[in-house]
Length: 111
Image (cartoon, rainbow, N blue to C red; front, top):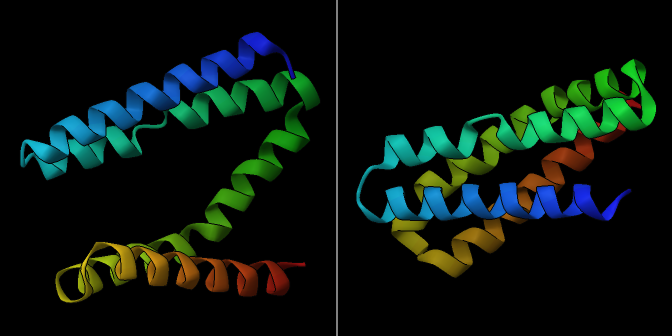
């Protein structure tokens, strides 16, 4: 992987995180979510996988993303309910553990 591509990932990721943080801290949750879900990072990843490995690797990547979408939805739903009750750190730890467990089960089933 080239240094230029890594720099592009860094910049795209930084812009996304900064924009989401800005809009979220302004109470504009829907706009922050739109920016977070905007496929700019996946487009950059798509192009780099495609250029490095072709169509089948790119399709495999997107198939994996779709297969892990339920695990992410479980994480997001858990965060929605846990955050007001448990606070930030315990909620994030539990939510990420839940995501990892659900993703692990999904990956075992799909094999």
